[in-house]
Length: 118
Image (cartoon, rainbow, N blue to C red; front, side, top):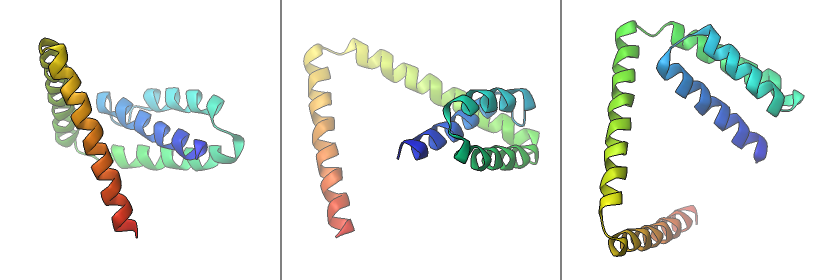
């Protein structure tokens, strides 16, 4: 479970780094160095294959698509920042309500997942 989580974090890290510079060998090398210290030797070859596959994939992506994705991610970050600012402006009571509402939604979602699995 921990190994899978580290692998997922690695892939997410690669994707985040690639949003700034697709197929940048420097960024990929930085990710490799960090992950080599935190992932066991048994997973290094699998991790290396994923990194290499992703690097090959991103090298094939047209510049227009990379730019479009970068702009999309920037706009999403701006929206998320605006959401955080709006949240800070509402009253503590409203923040508590939203937190409680979210807990109930999680419970309902969990219940639905269990009923689908059965």
